[in-house]
Every structure is written in C-alpha cells, then in structure tokens.
Length: 136
Image (cartoon, rainbow, N blue to C red; front, side, top):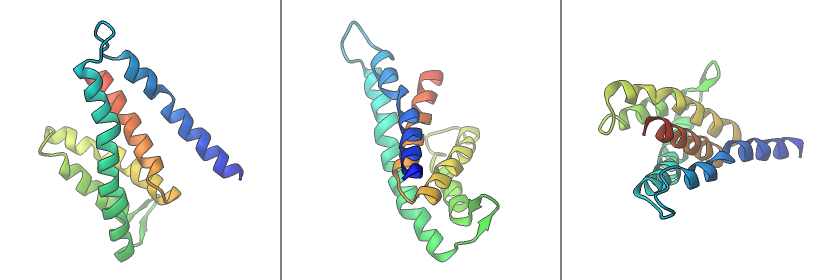
C-alpha cells in the first residue's frame, strides 16, 4: 500500500504544474489563444497517442520476443526508443530527433517498472509542456 501511495504522490507532483502552465501561457486578453490550443495538443494529445503506440504496443511486442536487459534498460525499451527517435525525424531536425532518445528511455523505464501507460504519459506530458514553454 505504501508503494501505491508513493507512486500516486510522485505522479501528482509531476502533474501539478501543468494546469498553471496551461492557464498562464499565451493568455490573450482573457480569451483562449492559439498558444493554449498548441499546449493542449503538445501536452495531452501527442503524449497520449505516442505513448499508446510506442509504450503500449511496440515496447510490449518487442519485450515478448526479446526480454533481455542492458543494465537498467530492457532491450525492448532501447529498441522502442530508437524507433521513437526515428519517428521524430520528419518533424524535427536530426539533432533534436536524436535528443528525443534520452527522454524516451525514461518513458520506457516507467512503462517497464509500473506496467501501465499512466506514468510514461504523465512524464511525456510534463516534458512536452516544459519544452514548449521554454523553446516556444
């Protein structure tokens, strides 16, 4: 029971800033702006879709066929992260697509540890929101 509570607390701490970011970034005279719509897409829609495909379908499929580990990371996580990075090539410069590999390993590690998509989706949302607010 302690582990369950601790995991929920960590998730709450990770998600806590998101409503603040969404309500304060890009507010235009009290009306919803295109920036808010972009944040909602980047912080909610993309992480849910990408994690469903990569951590919900691809990673478990690879894990069922190749379930070894390289240190902290499963082979399935490493291969899925490579595919995740490659999938970002059409919309990102090559160096940024490559940079996606490290967060992807973190998302996959959470999937391996908690056996749910909630943790990787939450972390992915957090990363995307921060990236959008910093990089624009």
